[in-house]
Length: 540
Image 1 (cartoon, rainbow, N blue to C red):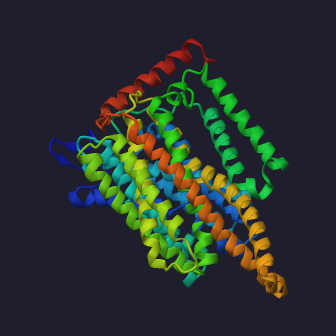
Image 2: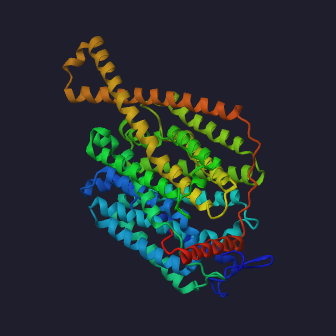
Image 3: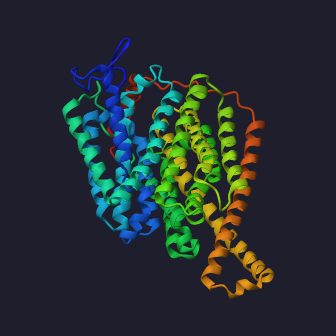
């Protein structure tokens, strides 16, 4: 924690004994963050191996992976309350034990409900442990608490680990088996817990804030809504959308969850997510931008793997090597954002326009160059620009929520909305929409191509049916992908024009409140809650 972790002009962490060099202490917490971020419930890069060795489907594994993101997003609203309730040592030890258990379960279970629930819980504790580490070294990263600087660090860690964990998982599966990735991370988590037990003392803040007034029922309902939304997007194509009772049931449950939540938020003193957070202009703007932007680059989830594997003939190791291109883009995007947005205070509009321009380059490259003979090195440019664009838009709009003027007790609720719309909806809604568009476009183009082939080349009638079908499907996929890239390119260009003609002089200026201000705000909230319970015990 910041204020009592430092003396004037000197940064120190009293959780760690003095025999550890002071300059090494922040790096110790960064080491912990890297281990925690690598320790997901399931590793999506190993999805094909899991499908082959278990009774799970691709959709089941995706649902488990997104459940981890939902657990992460739900935690935002209460993460500071838990931070002030428990010491860093307790949080890291508990999170490490939970993540070890989650890795053991995910390596052995074939039950979808167990897998999804485990990943949800793992996501919750992964977020809490990440906050415990990052908040401890925040003043070391930015002594003035400039969140545009801090978020550059956060995203270079989080987004880079996503790419690196995929690379590590595939090469582990290639040389051994996919289960070994879980055992490797169990070993790393055990090392982390041993280091925490030996090197961290149970130092807690100068005040004790009990976990009173938290709307846990609201948290469950919001998690239910997010789960239902994700289920519809992930399983929609498999179940043929609302023709299936499963999708209709998920829709009804999701609507009930959000309706009950909105109703409860109208009269609760401290709802899990308040109307003030939902109606904030910056939150609404970020949600809209996320939906548009991540839908434009949703071809990452729908096209790129199929194109590289089925058209270009890449094996798994060549496929995962493409992650290095995205990784370089992420690092470069964070560096560019730090130099321009964080240090030079470029406008939000300028940074958003740059991100959309990079997305346009990504879409245009595939639209003009997609073919059968593309070399792996030629994919560096589009993947580099996609990685840079996604990290720029994430840093910029997360910073805008900090600058939205929300009081601190409402600010974490806005982060929960941002986490859901940016991470969960961005990863599920766009691919579901583009995937359905691809299915209809491929059916149309396959019909046209098969008719054209038989009309102008009667010799193909004597080809084996399987060979003819494969040739038509491969050509239809190329044509359909080019067509969809073209439509997305038009939408991206129009979006960029709208951004350029809009007026926005706002620059990132907000400074995160001091920890003593946060403690004072939380203490006041708890006192009000205790006083209200004393007057009326039934009040909630």
